[in-house]
Length: 319
Image (cartoon, rainbow, N blue to C red):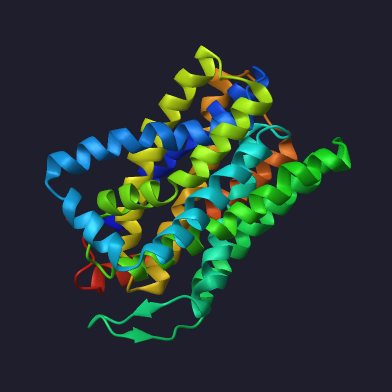
């Protein structure tokens, strides 16, 4: 259960992403700067932390062993995850993007048979889709469908597509990149070091995107720069490290791993509350609120189903 609690705490810090991306969009900020600034700010912060821990050389040693795999899966896990979310923020409110993002819980379960796994002895093995976890994920999916269908009723089809399809891409990219990088690292790095390594490996993406942003939209405003820095610290450093630590702890137990990934549905509630505070005091419709309730119910179901497994699984720790 400890991994699940850590995952839920990370969802609170992740919620900052959706709210501040919407704020930057409403203020006219370019999504290219919203995306690139987060990781450009993350890099020096993580560099200083990792260097102070004395593990910087170790990170670069592990990265040099498989440089192309680091670049590929970091680009997928960070680039194809965050760029689509920033694009979606241009067309949908923060709570809707956060709700749509919960499809990543199902995506993580569906990807299980095609991703490298390891048994407790560290040997690769095949895995089946965790059906028990998937049943709770379908409850979450039902909630997402209710939210999306109701939202689509009063929204131009173009905005619905541009607000939903990018999130769908991100929903698969994040667990794919995360789990592939766990396999690449083979337990050689901690969560903090892995986040730093992935940030470093994905720097070419962010530098190119920043260059295009400067060319097309000019320099970011002071407000956008400050808000991107807040997102970098809250979501990019704190939330990502917590979530990676939780998934690392559960990596050998598919049901528990699915439950940890399901904790991210807490972002829906946290995003809704933060949006009411920082953006506008507005509630979703009753149908959308019912959909949000189903999303949260699915998360609770995941946690309850995994309680027995987490209690009996040796070696599942965040220390």
